Length: 152
Image (cartoon, rainbow, N blue to C red; front, side, top):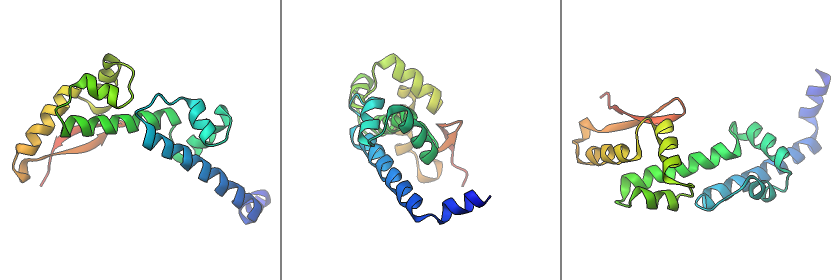
């Protein structure tokens, strides 16, 4: 217990921790601005000036998810936005968001969002046309998203 108390009162340890967090945030920012590029674990770890293994441990401890999961979720977020707001073909969205191929993207999208990319696009279009009181809202479910009727 004395060690735990000492570590919280140790300003040097606090400075080191803040430095690590800044480097992790820098890597997470790289994900946000370059998710459409073929980022590797080594690219992200280099951005944080850490070895790959140490980076994964520190990233998960700080953000609660792995760097790969963070990158995948960012790509899915961008894909959902493009599906909802554009008429781009799904194949172009796959390329635009950094996914490797359409079939892998479609499987991942369906597993995380609960519906196929095409069904998501159709649902979002209907939502835009629906009166305000009948709009569909996105609700988290099992780490993904599904559409549920608004309860107002």
